[in-house]
Amino acid sequence: MVAGLIAGGAVCAPEAFGQSSDVVPGMLRVTVVVELSCPSCAQGLERRLGRLDHVELVEVLSESGQIVLTPERGAVLDLHAVRQVIRNVGFQPVELRVHAFGEVKRKDDGFVLALPDNVLLALDAKDATDALLSMVGKPPVEVTGVAARPPGADHDVLVVNAVGDSR
Image 1 (cartoon, one colour):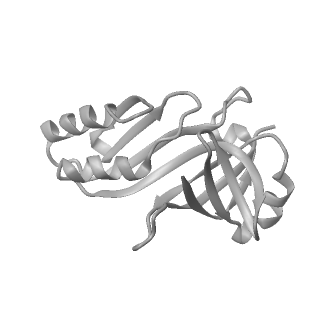
Image 2 (image 1 turned 120 degrees about the vertical axis):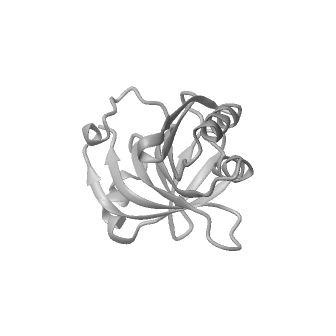
């Protein structure tokens, strides 16, 4: 599985993400922003999302219109499947905010974030080129951003809000 990342965020200390250095590579959290106008429908959505592979916990925050998915430790969620479940219940996901932890590697002319299960998230460094270059071959880093699937694309693009060094 390959997905794209567009990195245009700041480089932050790991404490900014609220994580310790014992975090294993994988997705740490996926927050779905969705209009939850029907409480009983939201409960059905919570149950269905909880049945997806590698989902450990589903938290519905009705007041803020958010659903927080916590993956199993070291796992990667299928963002396309998350969107499909939400749409099949009759909701429209506004955005998917992803918080992941992986190793930055060089690939072709750019960067990728290597995650478990051979998932590579392509990185378009933009303003973070120097920061990403300095992280190649180093311990894993934390990345947060908003995932989107461009029309006609077969993978997600993650517009990165922040990149943090795990040290």
